[in-house]
Amino acid sequence: MEKMTKKNIAVKIDHVSKTFKLPTESSSSLRTTLVNRLKGIKGYTEQHVLKDISFEVEEGDFFGIVGRNGSGKSTLLKIISQIYMPEKGQVSVNGKLVSFIELGVGFNPELTGKENVYLNGAMLGFSVEEIDAMYDDIVDFAELSEFMNQKLKNYSSGMQVRLAFSVAIKAQGDVLVLDEVLAVGDEAFQRKCNDYFMERRKSGKTTILVTHDMGAVQKYCNKAIMIKDGEVIADGEPSVVAAKYRAANFEVTDHHKLSGDVAKAEYLPGTNAEVPRVEINLLSKDVLSRDDILKFEIIYETIVDMPTGFGFSIIDLTSGGQFSIIDDGAVQQNIFTPWSTKKGVVKRVYELPLTAFNNRDFMVVGSVFTGTDVVGDFKQIGYIFIDRGPRFFVRNEDGISGPLLVEKGQFID
Image (spheres, rainbow, N blue to C red):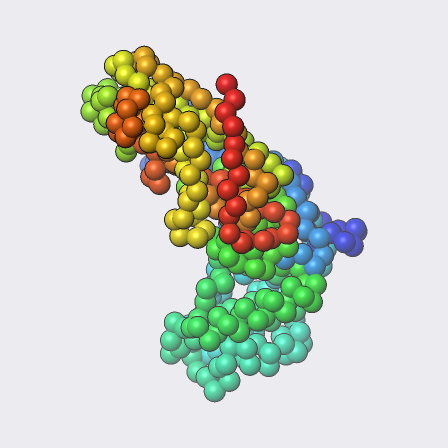
């Protein structure tokens, strides 16, 4: 791992890639292995965990890394910590890096708490003199002074967690790397950890945090990235990256890809034999500001001739399900005005200015209607609701999260 010469960069990840070879068959003899090689049978598949990842962490950053399970986050931290080596690219660090990938790694249950502090400190690269200097702070933070001469195997699980965590965060390194360890200990200890992280952020010490807790990302981090399938797909403002992460977790499986008899027999919620297809798809970004325009399309299909139209709602997920109706003209004041009277696919595009929208999480939903022009003579025959509605997120620089003000959109064909 190369040392940095540029002082304002703490960690630099430069076009890093990592691949693991996963065995597909076991070979019990050298002969079988050689025969397989001659036949071109590798006996393994390649899993590309990280794909040409690059980013920089400046000195003083509290830097968040988020992503769903299997995205490559932990592998990246292990490369930064020199546990793994990348096939391609380079990692450069300016200063001493303290890595805390898993709680209690390197602790020996047959040694005392004090002995484990020195053992773990040595594994982190500190001399005995350096551990002497930080020992009292570690013990005080863990609140275990009366237990330090007892063997670790006699500690409760909570005591072990507190000691391990205290060693990590009190070690005097230039860069602290943490993987999913914020929710440790009891409520009182978590409050102490919260105070420590707030103090660390203000002090300008560099921290890299991997977590699934978007509240922690927005609370502690000043920068963040999101990894998906081994690639960086979002970076910058933590609230925007957190919104991207939430959107990824709300992705819905496409049941239209079912085949054979199963596909014929199964309908998505809100669809049926008469209306087999109802979709709302975002055409704009899913993370927007009030300077942007939300753009989405509606697609539905009917298999018989009948008058049909579509009505919309924007659900405010942040305030517990309150929503504002956006009337498209299909159903207005109990008068039904159809978009189409023929069977087949109907597709429309809608635009909604977000000028008056505050910081909130939203969902687009709607219903397919049929009926006549007689007042009140219409009914719902298909819908998109919370099981399938696309989400979008408004994130403004002013951070205001007040009530939503309704702003009408208009159709474009």
